[in-house]
Length: 366
Image 1 (cartoon, helix red, strand yellow):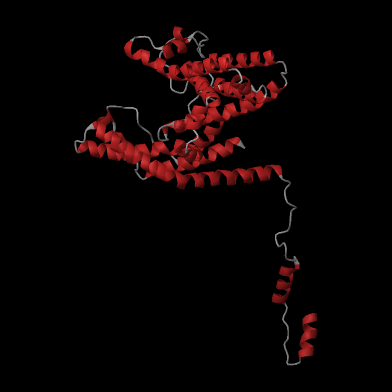
Image 2 (tube, rainbow, N blue to C red; image 1 turned 180 degrees about the horizontal axis):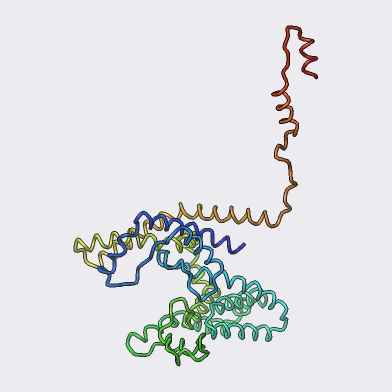
């Protein structure tokens, strides 16, 4: 039930954005590049409602790293990650079945390494999910956290290493700000080109990787950050504060709705303030404050709606698929089929009514 549970909230918010685009809520977005000197924020309306339905269905079945068409009709275009989550959730389920049969630890770890490396080389997001599965396996099967905590001489150097990994992975992009070397471009070039089979650096497509292509720095960052959350009590305490604990149930809503708020309300405020000569830094500060206020204000209202909608439809699908159908009954159940027959009989037959009560009773019994 993963697919409908995830797609239904997305379809609901996409429908809301469809309505907002139809009424012109994001009309000011086209003026935003003149203020921010950027040409990237744009979206287009659906041609027909049929295109909207088609793109929602495509979201369930498209294979990454293909970009769903709905990303061009959705504010911010974040829905390209939905197929990644759906496909690799099935990968994890199948992987657990295989891994469970590999009993020897070194063989199991070798299998993990083989799958992670192959997914990375194939530029598949599956490498991220394999790493998550590996960390879960280390915790559940091998109790590695208990082993690490009991050995401080191993725990603290390892904690330092994963901290550097988490901080250094995104920081390596800063090298390109001062030199002509870009690590992501170099790493992108060593992967195979799908159309020719050559290395990408030997083809015309060589360059900075598109945003929907996984990068090695993103993989190493996710590994380091995931391990840091797993092993560091300080990081765990930070993510357990009240504000974040309140926010966690609303993550999906925040993910789906933030683009609409920024590209509708945010665009209006930005353009209007710029027209009045407000400095750019103050403009952005006001836009951020107003937009985030509206976003966080909408979360308690929208989250129960999309969660209830998703759970209700999913439970109905599961019930119809798992339970035995109810016994077929006639249309008049629980009434007798003779109900209508008697009515027709009474309509067609003429009863002679007299003053004699006993005679009338005999006539009715006929």
